[in-house]
Image 1 (cartoon, rainbow, N blue to C red):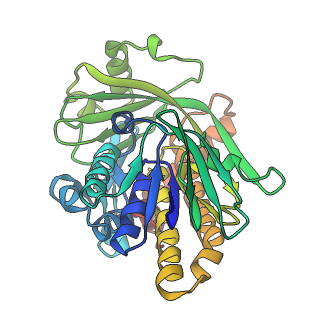
Image 2 (cartoon, helix red, strand yellow; image 1 turned 45 degrees about the horizontal axis):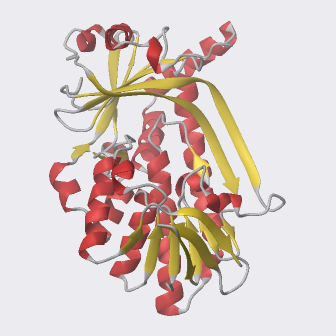
Length: 390
């Protein structure tokens, strides 16, 4: 096979780039190791920056998001049995976020690729990337027992942290940065009404909690737990009981509980790989960076990668201008590191750390006090939460 851009990874990042490029007349082939049902079964984040939402519209995939997604112009931080609202719209000239599940984003992108007869190959195994530092890279893989090859101009690695793309960059070229936090998030998805019209980030002596949502009948809740815990340690009853202890009375007393649809524990860590380009291979999303989920930067940072890469590829093919591709890694990483700083700040401020000294705890309390008492600090928080400019 031959294409202009070979995209490794059929999650939202790879599909979004494929769709955006197709709309501009640029050919792509997407390779995905899992089945479509598997990809659509993954439960992930659901808070989209305004820039991500605009990319979906530009990709002609925003109709259902606009019809069913919920516009949120603020969220709450809870502490000491009180809720404090953080206004997003006022300090950011009317910007907001869209609450719309990643699964639904992926479903919309698959449907758009189908309508345009886009090529997305599933159940692809043993992917290998070749000649990445030449002008004629190619990709080999196996599918249905056949050995296949794609010749292309560029390869985009959007295949996640464990994918082959980043591993194809020589070790002496790659620099990796990592921060592992000493706790995880136990998450529960349930067919229950949201605890609040807007998200609640709760900081308590018992640990962090988050009340999120996917729709008015589907909610997502999280509590901070030790890394030594497993899902088997937490019955639904125990989860709901602990969640209520970490929320203000006005929320816990009206919280609607129910059987869990999905329950999992995710460790928290930050990770960045530099550079995000090697020859004609470009990394995007989790292949290059992982975020603590506090503040919802993961999927949104992947979208900013796609924005820069999309613009660079369009300039290359339609204008003969390679400036965007030459500066892709630098520009993408500049925004990635700002997002890492925001996630680190939110995580550090709202969670309890097992090795905290009394000094650490008091500083964390003062940091939160300052945020809740300073209009400038809240404005900076809002600016980062709705998404820094691309």
